[in-house]
Amino acid sequence: MEKKQLSYRKQIMNFYVFNGISWIVAGISNCFSGKVFSIISIIALLIGTFFTLSIFVKNRQAPDEMARSNMNEAITRAYFIGYLIALLFYLIFGKVILGIIGLDVNLNKYLVEGLLAFIGFLNVIIGITFKKLEEE
Image 1 (cartoon, rainbow, N blue to C red):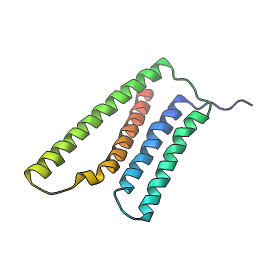
Image 2: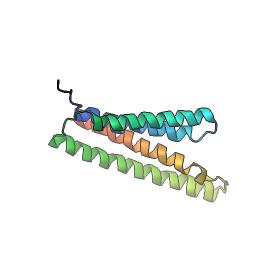
Image 3: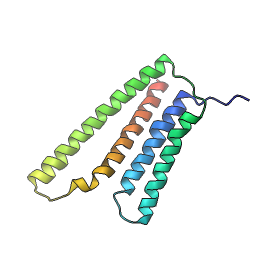
Image 4: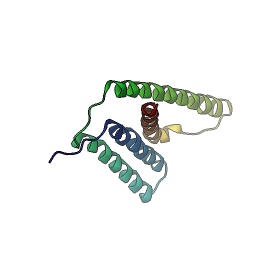
């Protein structure tokens, strides 16, 4: 009996959107201390791992030329949004709040958590943008 193929759209949803959401949850939960938040973070990352591995275990549908083009466009748009957000964050927090106002905040404490959430955010944006481009 032949396995049902995982559509390319579903592959993108699993890898980018669901996996990205799990990274965001892990990043946010790591900002808080306590066993509950550590457990939430571990569970979120395990769920992300499951979605990532599910793509490689199942029989997959190959993308067509339009899907490849839409994926490239989605990645380009997502990284543009990501760069813009990173720049604004740096300007607002790094220069205005910390530099001009003079607040003493240790942002290095949240570097790993911020990166987890940021990468997750980029993945979600890629997946959502791809879905919208495919619907056009």
